[in-house]
Amino acid sequence: MCTLVFCSYSQTDKYKSYNYHSPLDTTLLLSGNFAEIRSNHFHGGLDIKTGGKEGRNIYAIEDGYVARIKIATGGYGKCLYIKHPDGHTSVYAHLQKFNETIQKYVSDKQYAKRTFTIELFPQAGDLVVKRGEVIALSGNTGGSGGPHLHFEIRDQNQVPINPLLFNFDIKDDIPPSITMLGIYPKDVNSYVNNKTESIILKPTNGKDGYYISNYKDIVLSGEVGFGVSVTDYLNNTSNRCGIYSIELKIDGVTHFMHDLDQVSFAETRYINSLVDFEKWKKASLKIQKCFIDPGNYLNTYSNVINKGYYKVKDTLKHTVEIIVKDSYANTSVLKFDFTGKIEKSTINPPINYDFKYDEYNSFQNEYVVLAMPEGALYSDINFEFSIDSSVTKYASPIYNIHNKYVPLHKRITLSINAESIPKNLRSKAFIAEIDNGKPYYNRGNYSNGFITIKTKYLGKYALAIDTKKPKVEPKNFVPNQNISGLNKLVYTIKDNFSGIKSYYGTIDGKWVLMEYEHKKNELTYYFDNHLPTKPGKHEIQIIVRDKVGNKTVNNIPFSL
Image 1 (tube, rainbow, N blue to C red):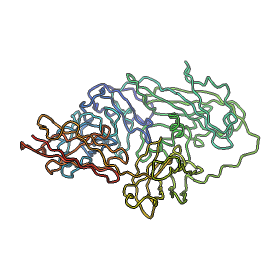
Image 2 (tube, rainbow, N blue to C red; image 1 turned 180 degrees about the vertical axis):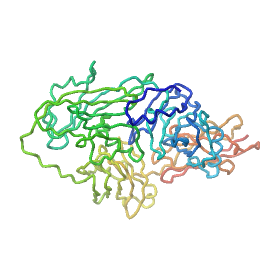
Image 3 (cartoon, rainbow, N blue to C red; image 1 turned 60 degrees about the vertical axis):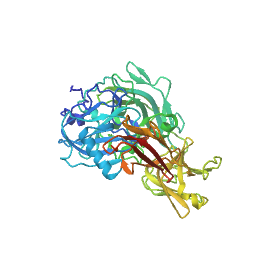
Image 4 (cartoon, rainbow, N blue to C red; image 1 turned 120 degrees about the horizontal axis):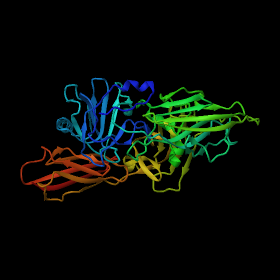
């Protein structure tokens, strides 16, 4: 392994002494890095390219034992967790398959429990691995968008650590790009160029750093916050990655600092408050705020004055510096001036918001009941409700539960009146979240005339009914075919409304392991020692259920 040049931050020095083996035997090129902005979470590790292919050898970075194995149709797909003597856990996700020893251990457990999706916690002596041992092959399982290895290092409390702070041979001498500047008035008595609306400006990159060229004067009054959209690139790859730290200085004084050594899973959803969520969802702008919402308790902030807001107290010119660094201390600086203004007009009374971020909130009428726990919001809002009866394809009107541009940190309880649904269809009814015109199933319960769900999203909701059975069709064979020349049986399974909930396969009445790849709508039986060996006729049966209980049974005879 090659030794890298590390960041000069003292808190990262402790990681310099580790000399882990590379998880791949190829040049480490990244398609995603630690803590970059993802939907509802900071990215927990590195996405390492595998050349657009599956089947690359994956190596244990150090001696240890397999402490956890999880197989899921979404998320990390097939995933290994290896505990090391130094207290760290390394994580390898989206795998195609495990090595022979681990694969047998897993398959035996899957057959014993009759399930493909499984989570196992082997004992320390069950699956011991050595540094540099091949533990798996790379793949594209779970929520992966293409073949790659998702790799993490976690501390003894299972909190992800930035792997780029270790000495993996990853090249990066490219400073981050600062693509947008946002300036935000805090309240009705704060102004940006005489308006209580935020503005977005595009910086120019010059020889002395980034500056604002397309805006002559910036005049601020009251309390004002700043934010930047930033992108980082590493050598030899065109993929956009995230940054390591942002620092806001005003007149040389640090008012805000945000750095990403670690982010716990308990805090990862605070990313929806770190960014300007509305602009992210409306315009795909990932502006990271250099100020903190009152309900944001992310632990990555430091050196913060007044929650990051600057309070204008004079009419002088002030200098703002926003310093952005990546994990290798490559640095970009945006520098600009603003002029203060003291407003002499009548002070506007503060808005009396009806939903408070630090209180329990509720709303109820004849159509819906909403219960929102304390801490679900990041800041106060004036809750809005409306009904859209123009769309008639659902079992109810569309209910606008505020709007989807306000993020939630905790689950809220939403109930919709379902008394109008006939009794014989209530088992097939559910609450659908409508996003960009597409319905998404939410698991709920019918009781006392209402269907109730837990959700982490505001937005459009309606009642829906699904009475259609899933589709199940063989893909690589036909009825009565002799399958001796094959090594697997593949089905296409689809459900275009509530979605696939479960699948069950048997051959001659005995359960066999079916692997479900939701991205391809494929259900596959890879031939194993449970395939009959007796020549002649046999039958495979597949049973697929959707999320409201509609069932399809498919029986196909074959021969050996």
